Length: 308
Image (cartoon, rainbow, N blue to C red):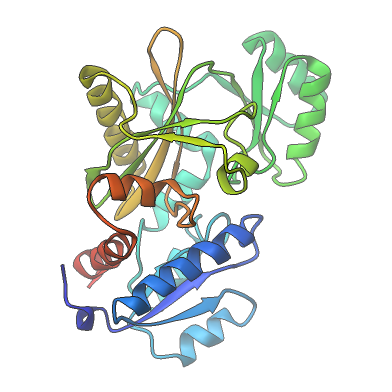
């Protein structure tokens, strides 16, 4: 591990204006506390209208990005920091923008033969009827550029599909609908090229939604994940290929479903995963022998080794 003096003065960027602001505030405070506890010269910036002025006026040697959602996880912040020549944590502009776009991520995976549920794009009630005919039910509707399961809904008929499309469209102009995969859900974290132990997620909700992720205390996290050695190796390799296809760097987290036949299906990749007390990357890191502070320092160290 690098000495803390190698990091210089670190700005932790969190908050922002996305629909995931509340989660980002918690994640950012946890990261900032860990850095300060390790002796890093760090300070926080709640990203707002004065961001450019703050970045220009403060002495900043590197940035730790803990902004979830649009404006922080979609390549925009990464591009700004590139222009200002401030090294930063995590994935670059292209990978961040691609991973934030669920539709184009799926198109990349399809082109490489990686399994991901069949889907359609919704822009009208007519699209909903066409998707119902092509995909059947049940389906899951999601905004194409949101995270934390915001705006998502499971539907079982056309009327529910139309209502769910209209609700999701309040968050995003592009709305995606996918085949529903019945079976266990797994989340797999990547840290500096290493796949961390997979986690099986269980919830009493219809799916692993916002409440299950950040509020409920009865959500179940299984580590080891319960797969046999062959299937776990298959899941790890699928995650590695999925993240390589997107071009992630530093850290990331993939979400995967397994159907009744044992086949895995890729859902999405997050390039700035949550770092709250309910978050999955810290859990996976602990299973790999890293406490929260070590995890944060490892992510920060990657920014030194890859961006100077």
